[in-house]
Image 1 (cartoon, rainbow, N blue to C red):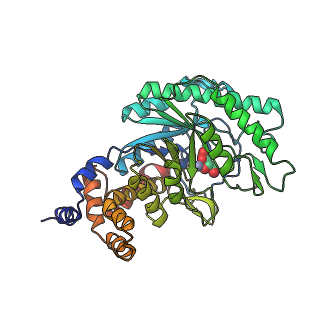
Image 2 (tube, protein in one colour):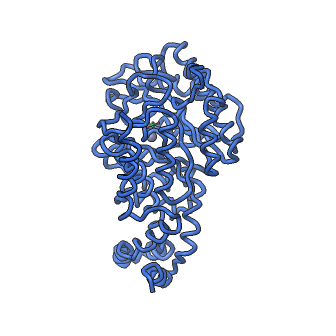
Length: 416
Ligand code: RNT
Ligand code: ZN
């Protein structure tokens, strides 16, 4: 008997059908972020990354053109099991023959190549207006700026992005999650905390007044506690974003697990939000001491977040997207280790006897619960993971690095 067959028997004794799990997980879409490949630069400007986010490192091989970025993403997809969506930022617009337009004038045609890539793999697309790295960010503010012309420019950008999101949904037949995040805030103590928030609220409301089909476009608001150079105050705080989503039908809250105080955990927030919202969205990242956006690993909190989604029967209610960017290591490795780690976390969550564990809690058999939860950690998970990789025709963990090294040698190292 091979290792998978033996693992299958062990899980079957716990009431878990590994075949059913393998058939389920491969169809759960996870959004793959294009911005890991080029250090969040985009194609529409040549300035620095702003908005309180930062990439560190200068590992060779950064994608410099749409073709390079798309080739890298195709490589990553070939290394990762599971269904994918493409997550694109507005700054990744592609202008043919130098026909540049500013962000308030973006049109679906500027993203036709992204649609073609998505269609090639039967994937959906997610979208993000880009409210950073642009000369019209005035004094660190966009949608919450006291300057009306600045707000209006960014509102027009948001509306253009709704139209593009709907185009993505129409082209692919898959709903498009459109996430609104701004780095708006102040480095030091502000004298008015409410004014910017009222303006932010009204600006997002104006964006959402653009007509769209709620079954096709899923607008989200992402909160954040602080950014680099934006330490004292962020306009889109947790309370702001959660309240906004709660008060606006069809708008989803988006939680990024790098955006909270370090002892807060998004795993605990997932069931709290699912008790109220029909749908929520996540940015999955790995913060070390701050929102450092390291590649996601198969670590405790990653496992815990996936467990909550599965336990809450939330696979159809939680839009999952990766969001991190490490420029200090091979970017293909960062992308694929992160995607694979989230796949592992989902798989492990599905291979957990959740109903039995819940029963122990409800019967207050808490000693037994602790022992049982520890026992699940050493089940032969790795054998099912390897089987998943083999069936998906992607490398197992031990074979991954050789593939990455080969691509670095043949492709990335030539980018000088
Ligand atoms: C920044 C937010 C935001 C960005 C992307 C590029 O802290 O997490 O989601 O990372 O939109
Ligand atoms: Zn994020």
